[in-house]
Length: 154
Image (tube, rainbow, N blue to C red; front, side, top):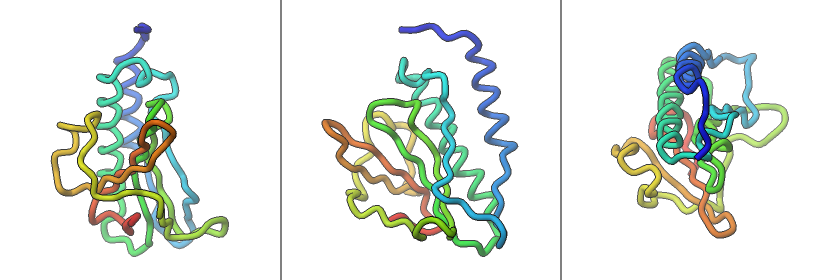
C-alpha cells in the first residue's frame, strides 16, 4: 500500500471545503451535472478505509445541500456516484434546469432499491437514502440520493 504524506491536512481541507462551499438556489444560477470529487490524489484507490471515510464526506455534502436548499423553491437533483473501479472517480452531483441538458435527469438503466453494497454497509444504515446500481463491465456503479432532497432520480 502506498503511503501518503499529509493525510491530516488532506482531511481538514475536505472538511473545510464541504462546510464552506455555498450552493446557490436562485433563478440566475443553474447546474449542468455539476460535480465535485473529493479525492484527487488517489488515496481512496489504495485503501478501503480511506474510501469509506471519503464516502462519509459525500454524505455530509448531501446534508449541506439539504440545509442550504431549505426554503428555496428551485427544483434540483443531487446524488452521489460511486465508481466500481476507482474511488478517485466518486463524486457528488448537482443538476438543475439549464440551457444545455435535460432536466430532470432520469437514469433509466439503473436498478433501484437494492441492498446496501458491502462497501457502504455501516455507513448507510437509514431508510433516508435510495441506492441504485448499474452494471459496469464486471462490477456495478452505484447511485445514491437522499429522500426529500430535490427531485428523485427514479
